[in-house]
Image 1 (cartoon, one colour):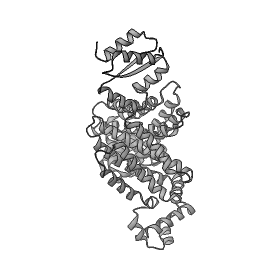
Image 2 (spheres, chains in turn brown, orange):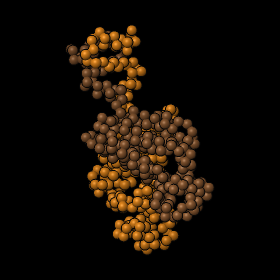
Image 3 (tube, helix red, strand yellow):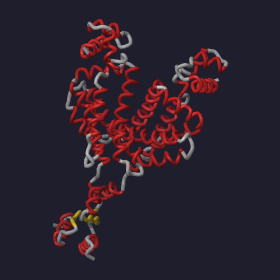
Image 4 (tube, chains in turn brown, blue):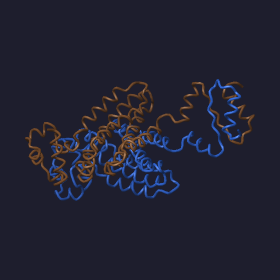
Length: 223
Length: 223
């Protein structure tokens, strides 16, 4: 019944316009009573975003299941992928909704609140993981916003192309960019590994070899 | 007249509650006609955020006045500081609005749209500046979101402390974090310098010296 309410609503919103469609129109087309509508959806906006609440619960559970050894930035990137998966499961519906949302200011604001809930969920998790950093809360908020922005960039690119193309590849590219910004870079990894018995030597190309060897020996603690 | 409408509205919203206050109540207290209200504000929400439209215009003008030699990330950080300045000019009003907005869902959604307009303005500017990068649009969206998140983090910290303390110092700390994330870091500078005649060798501490020398020679292109 829930699905047929969503289908009826979207069909009417596209045919007649969102504002022009009443909840009575929707229940009439779906062949159910008015109270059935409100059993599933608190308002007309909610029927346009029927799966977000479930997706937010899945995201929260996924983050709660995180282990200490999981990189927190990669974990929130994977959490964001759950949202894409929901959109990609039903490209036709997702593209229809995208077009509808662009036209209806009320739906755009509703979508902003939805996006904000995802961002807050990611930030809450990161705040816990960054709790021992002096800039933990700031970092958590900034990383969460960056992940959401990258996710939305990839999602919108795919929706603008009418749901054609490889949404997952687009998403990987966008989230990899964020992950590369905050997960250890080669040099940072080198610095971390340095404690674990690695030496990094930086030298100019023209430096004579005797001098390079001396610097390497110094770095190895053999001087 | 605009100011007295704002003052009357905020006073009533705090005394009676936002939902319980009508536009008629506001104009009665301000001693003006109903049409005067709508001359200044399209809706009841707008009277709570009277300066954002002006601030958005100032931000747009500030970004348009940017020179090619300005670092784009630092420029958007400075643009975000314009929003803080607006809040800091009137701490009492800002703190009152913060408390009111926390309580009224309709105002929170309104605020989300306002924040989204700032973010879009910053992203539009960055997209232009990053136009020659293959990941320009993605980078623009992510940096804009990060700047807005850092700004909001500092602003909320200050508002939660009832507008006490040094808002500017808090903001500098937050925006410096974002700037440091995307403006050239020492390691990125190293990587750039590498092309300019620098060789980086990473080796394990236990590696025999002959092997280190061989690797350095290979790196120096002398093999």
